[in-house]
Length: 81
Image 1: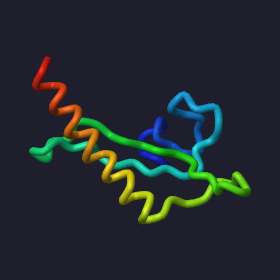
Image 2: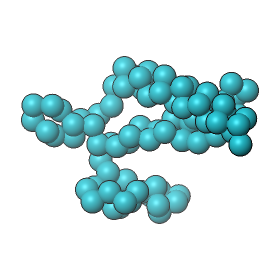
Image 3: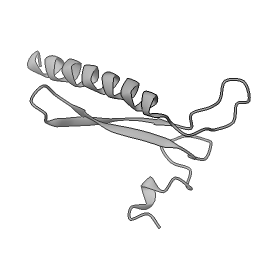
């Protein structure tokens, strides 16, 4: 059982019309290591069969790179506010 119902992958959530079967979420941190957000992807699909498959460590590495870049962009944009 999930502690917070809104994070229950069995529920329809995040405004998505399909059920969440797989999820990969990583914190977005700025250059100081401060959390400034979360980057989340759901339901990875096999290209040929269109079935939902688990995320790999390579997927995590790619998402981590995106989260790092997003953190830098968000921090820089905040400097100009």
